[in-house]
Image 1 (cartoon, rainbow, N blue to C red):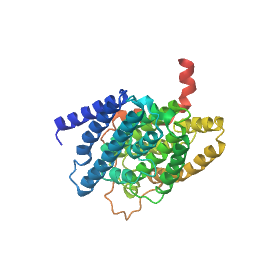
Image 2: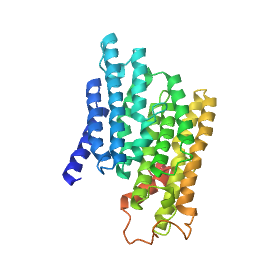
Image 3: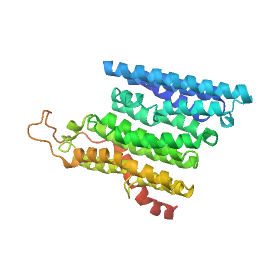
Image 4: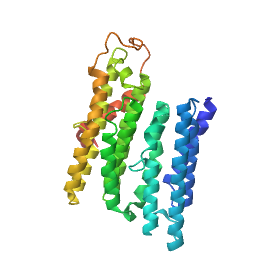
Length: 346
């Protein structure tokens, strides 16, 4: 793909996201979502591999259905209340349809089936966009309509997302699929708290995006897509593999790393809302995803490849790692430990 085309698609992604997050009217929000969808499709299908074409087709069909539901929800609400404002979504049927539409957009259970397949068929850089940038506009719509949505339904979908995100990622060997199920699990945490503290959902999303970006860029630097290849990368970039270990543990939410902060705050808020059983359940279910993070970390750093490996021997590379990877990795692991120091300075 030539640079001019990439620039056009990147600018379209920025424009679509900006239109959606800054709009008050349902039609402009829908238009922004459509621009985003059309801009990402060529980036998914750019390798012309059958798997990539299949991923682009699946993505187009699911996102089109979700966009149609967003329009249907807003029109139903406008029909009954005369309001096109996003924050004035009050009709119960419209709220239910919108919850389904945003769940399809985000990949929440039970509308999650498309996401691992699409991520598996995309390059790592496009997968990063699908996991972070493309999730931002739907999260924003969820944030603006949160007071109108049914909290019981959102909590049920959140618990199912955390459970299935961890459970279905257990037997995967493809790293992109593992990261897709990781994304589903994290979105479950965000959906659980959106009705009670929407700002906490945004904080969770920002930190998740930071950690996921660090993981994707690290994997892109060492050109790794499978667990079997990940086991041979220690000899190529030992320092990056060691930092990848810490980033994965941070993504798992282990203290004292950055990823522990949103989980800690969400459990605290759920307990304040007299929802201790929900907090306990979601914490226990997140242990499922901890297993595959530990397996990824184990393969990246602790396992040495056998001498009879089928892969080409990876030697030390002189190619320097991009500075952004270093900055993101440090942020993804050290934000929580450094926060008392930063707060005292500020």
